[in-house]
Image (cartoon, rainbow, N blue to C red; front, side, top):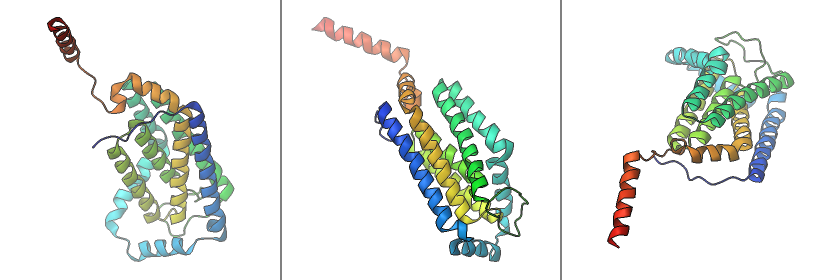
Length: 242
């Protein structure tokens, strides 16, 4: 599957894109909280959680608990982001590694700040006992940050599709376990995606420069020395015959 078309982003364009991502994230999350969350669970929240409780599908519990482990705590916040950053370092993309670590940390901080402001109660009768506020979902925000950022850094549609599946699965798992309302997961996805785009936009010019220096970062196979040498010999041969 081919990668998306790449266009150069100027410093001014990167700043505008980062600003737009920040504003849209604030407006979307703030609006969601003001219109739905502040008044209590919405009709959509109640309908979704009632559906899960009436038709629980016990085979979902084990995968949901696995996603709970992978999406949060020391595994989701430290181990996985640092492992992915290390992979970028191995690929000789230090700016991408720094961008990934920065976005992951920023997403976690934004989630905690919004939780303190919203102070929304979690659903009752959850399969896990958690004491922190419900809005937004930190697990989904973390998943969205990694999914969007990997898509922007690797620039392959297959990565974007896999990332979208990961975010949707995480959102389902959080509501299946009863630890979040559906609107919590929606807000988490918005926060995670917004932070990812914001941080990426700030580093976009340097990331593009780094990508041009390393063909593998653009999804291209570098030419081998034999191939380059063969091309040079052929060129010299054509010049001699002319």
